[in-house]
Image (cartoon, rainbow, N blue to C red; front, side):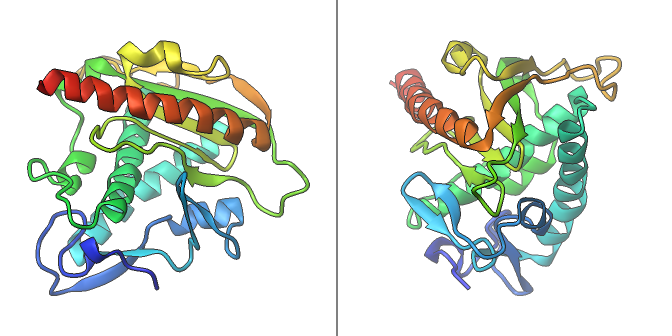
Length: 248
């Protein structure tokens, strides 16, 4: 099993010292099964590929349980509905954003083993609690893929964002769905194949109604991966630059 140095002694999600360590697959089992990526390597970053079966992160028992119950279980159902053309509700869009933040946060920790991802909130709190004030500034970009290229024995599963400082932007292609979460001010950098959705205010009516129906923007997974990679490179750097300018 591959374990990043940053994860050796503390829970990657809550930061508590590991007394009841459990090894959690970075890529959830349901997604590995859905994409058929059992025997291949997938993108963790644009420069790093890993075996999804071998790449694990240590979580405490509570975080492992809560991530499975509150994120992975519901998100697996969201992917099924999206790819079946059933659309997306506002509450499901928020779950997808928090799920992307989980993957992006763990990937960042792996790539920066000596650095601190965040002290307040922890990754656990950030991805399990409802999105607060920043929700009005967020856009979820979604595109459905028509077909998986028959030359491949599996479907795409990989991250394409490579932020150094920003923790909002995450992008990747997963099965027949391409996803991005970004600050709404950067919507012009999203490829035209994506449909854009802005989160409703907390307390809004019909947050569980499937009112957002993303377009099928890509004919094949090859096109989706190539387009998402190029856009993610630009948007990763753009979000980092925005953060640095705000801090200066």
